[in-house]
Image 1 (cartoon, rainbow, N blue to C red):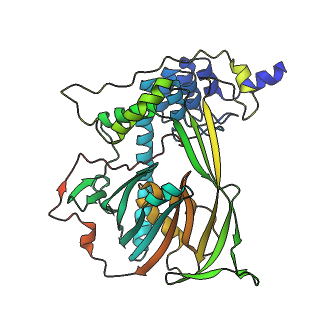
Image 2 (cartoon, rainbow, N blue to C red):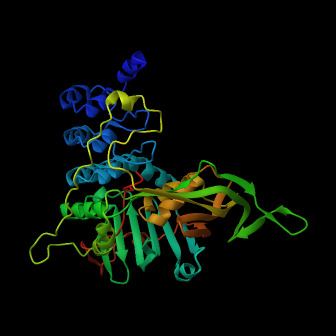
Length: 449
């Protein structure tokens, strides 16, 4: 046994330095070892540095580009673990680095995306969204929406009336989202508020005030992850008829479609709140509502807003490196606070209609959705389309959006066109810029990353 321990201890040298608080050796090794390597628990060096409160190691790893958008075997990111630990400076550093890495990844993909859009024919398309819930009272208030999408060259415009949603709050409007791929990044994304005749250049570089507001929200709310599990999903042909059963085929708009039953679709949600006190749970609901409505923008009466203080660190772990490194995979010893944890899963019955006639390919759709996925519900659609679907194009889809809400999406109209008006992709001359309005376009998901 001692020989096995010694052998195991030779593995994961960066992890070992962090576990033992050896910053000097970490500085020497960090340039010659894989900074993103995962150990048997799926933890990267950054995970361990955060969970053990090794603040100097955290800053050193971030300075060398340690990836923040990565999950361990338990499904948690370094940012999620930092919220549990509760050190405000560490949380702020991780949020900044996560946003920076997301911007860099977007810009890296951008040339290929723009080239793909140029190669695609110009078109007009309509997506109809119908939101439904198994909760009767909720179902009455859920919205529907028709997204109208124009594509010309490397430019895309989407018109929508559904601006944002969070839990059971839905924000309606008359919004146009414009992507001009041939423009420089700072001018490529624009949002028009057609009722107020205002526009905003979407920027992914937040101010210090916005970063600190976000940290307050993270420290004041549950650490949550909700994702659609696709591992066990299978497709079977949907049947129709009472006595003589046959495969279901129908027209969806102008397109013939074969219907499939989606089996094994599960929405898994997990949350942690060990960093929150009972008092927090009572008062932070009001704080959250205030922050998410943007009421903290700007200083009140010349005074900066009161920020959430760091938590007292959790008790120091008595786990040694040798004990940690031999722990069975998936049975990570407790390194931080005692978890206050809840998980749930809900199965969904759903169908998808696949059409061999639809003029757009799935790959083309993915390129279009990559541009407009800053909208949360469209991001869910892209996640679904990334699955290995039956043959054809998904002209009608059921997908879970929230634990109690599903969406039925119908591609009800599509036409390649060579007469798309170029002015659709410009800001009208009578619109004024509104730098204060902040639409919820996120390049990352804080807790599920």
